[in-house]
Length: 432
Image 1 (cartoon, rainbow, N blue to C red):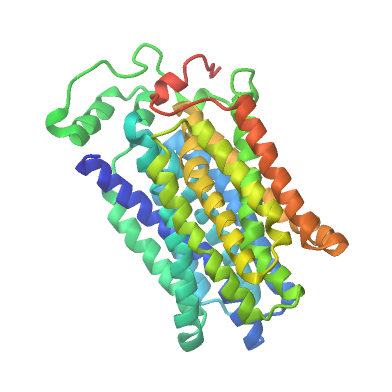
Image 2 (image 1 turned 90 degrees about the vertical axis):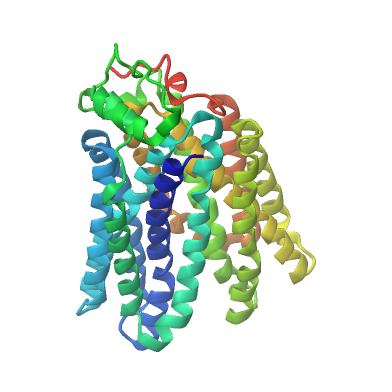
């Protein structure tokens, strides 16, 4: 990986770190709001709904904006939205305004992950694309960990408003640093802007640059002429279904284990502190899984890695409720978290971003991501009744079943992407 690739990776990763930090700090903030009497359980629920709805809108909006105006323009716009929105949220005069500004913030937050992964895929060379892009998975782990530390150190002493200040200032600092980030050469070529694309490639490759005919020189695709319903055309619909199922399953399973397990443990008799300590032990799997994904993603076929990760998470999740002791349950839970974050690194950050052609890559990514967010909005209506009916065992049966479905979809409809250029992957896909 050359200096230019490392620079682009660092700038993309910085934005994603702030994105995950801003998303993850919400749980600690609403707990503080509840304790101080600034909010109640009903308003906290509305706050969470506004969070998920904003993320969904941002994911859906990011695709058309990025495909029409460029990756760089969309990337900078979403940073401004959640940076300024976060600072405004810090000055909220009431819970109503805080909820409204959280929704605005999350439009930018939802767009960041869509544009970031797709942009990095377009810059990375085919031979090492998996390893480079999978490194973005560290943003999820470290962003969430930093938010937890911030909630622990900042919120009790300085107040919840300063958490929004740190997120907003961080976003604006990254915005300033990213003003010089280059546009995606692949997007420029899809617009017929070959001279600009070649200039950026020359800059990236430096002394290793060799002039060649631009990709798509004879068949330039103008993104604005590709309608959104191309996602359901005969040559694309299998890719779209793969993206939809993967987004829904990954978001549901990760949120189930990170967002609901603490509550389930408390319901089963553990104290709040014991429950949070239990989850803290399992969180070690976030880093283990990400490291594992980065290490092996370019060494074995993507489809085999994804199916293996799904099976491992499903088996561990299936035996979790039958653990004979808390210590064994913690160990099994760590395996589950390792497998889930391995899948996030391989699938969420790399595989799904490789599948769609450049002309509508961001719309494809954004559509799948937005549907996954929508699934999170409605998931409590499934999780709560199932838990009340049968406890944690049927919940984890749903968890395992969802992962089995995802593995079957990848095995049936997934295409192998390891070591193949994005242009080769797009061959045979009609955009009109």
